Length: 258
Ligand code: BTN
Image (cartoon, rainbow, N blue to C red; front, side, top):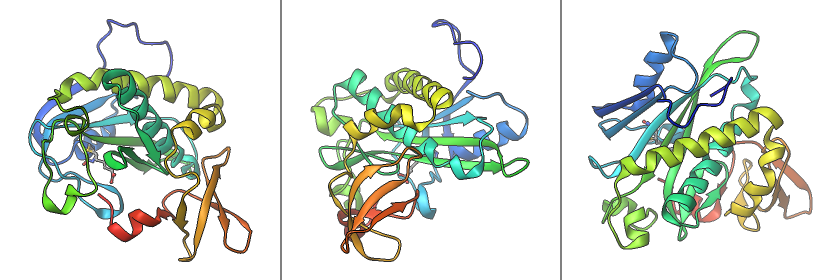
C-alpha cells in the first residue's frame, strides 16, 4: 500500500481462506515471515475470532466479512491507535458506496448503523526498534448477511441484511472495503489524521454524547483532536483529552459492547 499506486487490475497479496481460528493469527504468521504491507487475509468463518479488550468476535460461516490487513507504517507505538480511526472511517466509506448505508463511528473503532453495531476494528501491533512498531495488523469484522443474532447480541448488533431487507454476499464487500482502506491509509500516511478529521467528524456517532471517562466520571464528547484523541467536556467545565481505548459511551458502558 505504500509506494506506487496499485493499478486497478493488479491483484493484491490476498489470502482467501475458508475456516481459520482468527485471520489476525494467520496474518501475524505471514508478517513474521516478511509478508509485504498490504497483505490481506480473509476467511468465511473464524472459530476464535478476536474483539477488543479480550472479547471474542462472533460469526456464523459465510455471513460476515472478516479480514486482516498488514500495515508497516513505521510509526511510534503511541500513534498506532490512529489506525483504528482510519479503519473505521474507511468502513463507513465502503458501506456508503457499496450498500448506501449511512454508517457512523463510535470512537475509537466501532461502526454503527441505525444505532447498532455493524462492524468493529481491532489493531494489533508488533514491537519494532526504537519504540516504533514493526507492523500493525488491522482486523475488520462487518456483519453482512445475518438475519438474526444470538440473544446476547440481538439488541445491539445489526447487519447489512437487517438494514436493507435483502441478502448480501460478504465477499462482494471485500473490494470496496480494501479500496477505501487504501485511500484513507494513503491520506493518513501523507498528511496525518488532521487530513481525515473533517470526514471523521461528519461520520461521528460519539460527538455531542455523554461518555464515561477513565476516572469513571461522565462528560460530553465535544470534538476530536488533530492526533485522534477524544476531547471531552467534564462536568466542572474542564476539557479533557482522552486517548484511545479509555472511554466508552454511556449506552455502551451500560449495555456492554460487542
Ligand atoms: C471489536 O469491535 O471488538 C473488533 C472486532 C474485530 C473483529 C475482526 S474479524 C477479522 C479479524 N480477526 C479477528 O479475530 N478479529 C478481527
